[in-house]
Image (cartoon, rainbow, N blue to C red; front, side):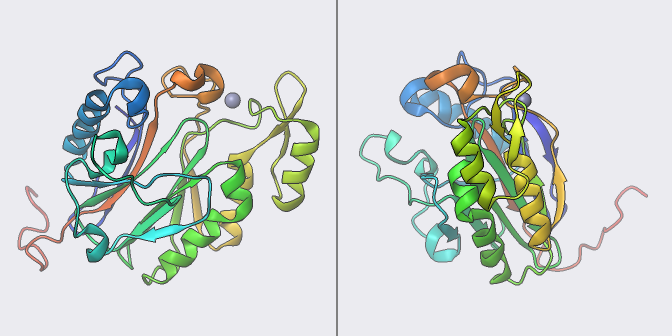
Length: 267
Ligand SMILES: [Zn+2]
């Protein structure tokens, strides 16, 4: 179910990147693509992931390869329902708000970004108790979605977030036309690459790493290429019938609103 799962301590941040292991449908675990895989499949898989991370609420936007960041505050959560994250895939339910990044300082809600080759980036700031997640494909990365996310986190008090780059298509696999590589690399240092078969390519994880370091983030990375690893979903490999990987981040509730009396259980 998880490529990486970092559980939250009391009051702290937790995060996870899903893979396709398990799940209730033929493509394996998928947190998106309800129109292709069926809303019931995606709903079941989402519930299984929430149960595994121990969080009740899930929030995900309608991703549009833009740079808008939603701050999930009490107002954003006021109309929340268990199916809200499925958006208009549920008959009669409105579409989710359009955005490509989410931040929050509220406990008990998992923020979800869905990808299959594009770059998911999770942000945590333990001191400020603020977390975020961004969808950074070629277009969003070049347009500054990571910068906008770090700015939104700063508004929540985060001064030095840790950024965790999740599974994405690597620079040896993401083939693009030569003119596109040159145009993107002109604005994104570190993006120019060559495929393992010798054609022009883009290294989005590499470019994101450089950008995040420049923004003052500490950067960690999950070393996995979606196209090469059959246990991950990849649009380039699987086409439109791909499933969706999830990048989730959340804050656990503080225990009783105070320092727990049993801070060192079992010792
Ligand atoms: Zn690769």
